[in-house]
Amino acid sequence: MTQMAVTPMAAEAARTDSEFLSTLCGRLRPDAVIVEPTALRTYECDGLTGFRVVPRAVVLAESADDVRQAVLTCAEFGVPYVARGAGTGLSGGALPTAEGIVISLQRMRRIIEVDPYNLRAVVQPGVTNVDITSAAAQFGLHFAPDPSSQQVCTVGGNVAENSGGAHCLKYGFTVHHVLELEAVLADGSVVRLGGANREQVGYDLLAAFVGSEGTLGIVTKIVVRLVRNPVAVHTLCADFPTITAACEAVTRIIAAGIVPAAIEMMDALAIEASEAAVGAGYSLDTAAALIVEVDGPAAESKVEFDAVNQICRDTGTTKIRIAGDAAERAVIWRGRKAAFAAVGRISPDYIVQDGVVPRTSLGEVLSRIAEMAAEANMRVANVFHAGDGNLHPLVLYSEAKGQLERAEELSRDIAELCVDMGGSLSGEHGIGTDKACSMPRMFSESDLAAMWHLRGAFDPKGLCNPGKLLPTPRLCGEKPGVYVPHPLEASGDIERF
Image (cartoon, rainbow, N blue to C red):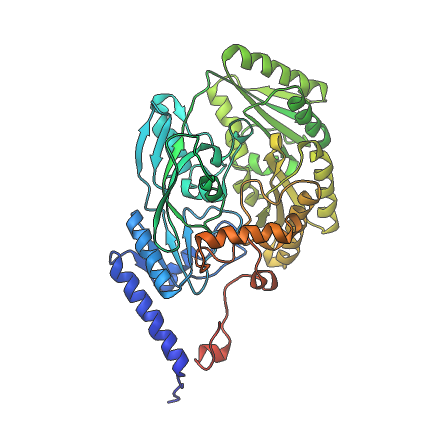
């Protein structure tokens, strides 16, 4: 029998790993730590499935103390960690590290309180977005941020990415609806940011935390702002013969001083996919469709809706469908919210990109994206928040046909095009792993240095969600993915640092 020599360094590494896992398991419930290799693969990626890394272990936290014990153990042993909610993120923000652990918050799903008098709710991070609205509905209230994945995405993830949704045009993003956070920092300390009142003195650390993509700490409790349901809601779906005409309608609506609750756009490819999935009644023979919703006081919203209707006609709409009641309105929205997932019906694989451009540049940018797609011999579907210029191009490809690298390159080029047009790399999906290397396209060295200083103040050892948001030499010089050890490493003759 051949015996493999074990070097002292490899033996010490194995001992340290065993000691770390033993300590972690000892501080938590017996069933709270997953180490079985097959089970770990459940956590190897988020919604950006092109990047996959199997973590060292997964902690199934059920309380803030579970999170704290896991973080304390990681700090003690110098082990990196990544917080994870439902895993619906689209930028690789919850991608694990092979050396680290995942701290899952999905079991922390309790709605602690709904306070209709102060228009707020207190929730744990594993509560789904839509569950807050469901709990508040009896009081005539709702939680305004409404990403398309709101049925399954968690509020903790919304906080990490500063999620928006269709109605963020009028009501704002997650940051505008979070009053207070409880969070565990990298040293295991528990802090509270914000407060019951919206006006706080001093530096706005709450706003810095929202949208930090899990790099500053792990949120364990959230106080969110609730909004009263509008008295009247009017919704239409308008077809346009060209994308340019639809973009012109968007510009004229906002220029008229009207701020609808939502203005969404879908192109022909997105409509084709959505109709195949849910049959919401969209026209299959149109180049683009606008979904516009106006809400508010009955008289005011009716005047604004009539004005929107007329603007659509003036800019060349070929068909206008007005929702006659709440049921028809729900059908129209079901088609829009199903679009991302529905694209799987027309393409085996796709990348969902996320970028922002000035609203008046929408037509020009979409034309350029079409040209870029043609040059790459690929298809791009567009379904997005037109009212605030937040694009969501979906790059369609087939990994089986070897198109992944070309799709990733086109996706990156589209994101950087948004920056070149005076916009941003992301509107709500975050930077994560996907676009960290593009950050220098948008920010100067001094800008990035300031961000590193902020991150270092919260997490000086860099253990909290490493390799995300900000560019690092390793990240930008080496594509993330499942780590394949060198044979000498596997035999214990060398170590990886």
